[in-house]
Length: 163
Image 1 (cartoon, rainbow, N blue to C red):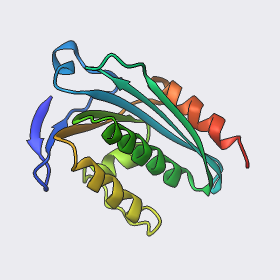
Image 2: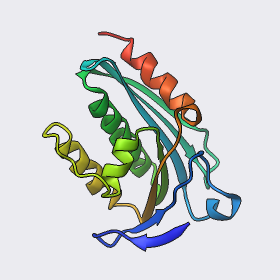
Image 3: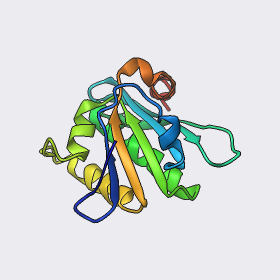
Image 4: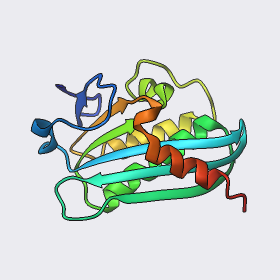
C-alpha cells in the first residue's frame, strides 16, 4: 500500500487490491470499511443505493443502508451511494476510511485516471471529493461485483421499491 497526499493535502492510500478487506496490519490505520453500490432498473430507471459500513475500531454493529432515490441513471446511483456512505462515516466520527466500489468508472474518476465529462456526474464527483477531503486519509478501491454482494443486494432491493 502506497501512502501519498492528494492535491488538497489529505492522506491517500493507493492500492490496486481486487478483493475487499484490509490486511490485519493495515486495519489499525483505518476506522471503517465502507462498501457502496448503486442500482438503476433501466438506465435511467428506478434507482436505489446500498451501503454497508464496517466500523473497525468501535464496538458497534455493521451499518446497512438501503434507500430508493427516484428515477436516475446507474452512474448517478453509484455516486449517490458513495456520497451517502461517506456522509454516514463522517456522522459516526470516522477519520480514516477505506471505500470499496464495484464501479470501475467511479474509482478511476475519483483517482484522476478518467475525467468527469458528464454534466450530471460532475456535481456528484465534486461533492464526493469535497467529502473525502474531510477525512484524515482515505482509500478508494475497485472490487469485483462478487465482493460487493451485500451493498449490491441493498441497492437492488431499494430500486425495486417504487414509491
